[in-house]
Image 1: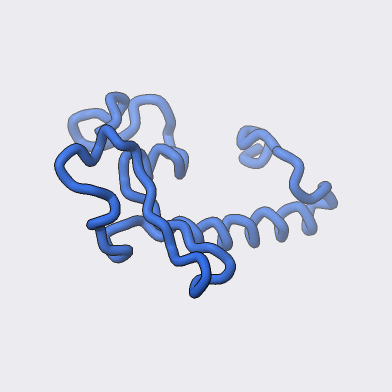
Image 2: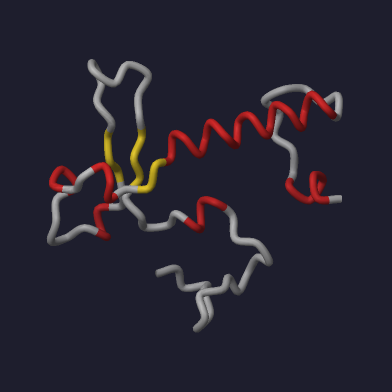
Length: 98
């Protein structure tokens, strides 16, 4: 568990926890472009799985990161297009929330 969470599971640093924080420590499922050639992989911090091998985890036991990243990429592209901003440029979150 993240040390910045309070007793009720709320972040003590950010009003809205970033995605990287929300998935901290969870096994993450990454899907590759050609699934039959490169099957999905599950990854996590080795310190979180000392008694269970990641290879023994089912993909259903992991957070599906690929699908979420596709949604975030679509939101980013639409935001940049609607606001006449260059694509793939990092924009500070404070600027977006203004």
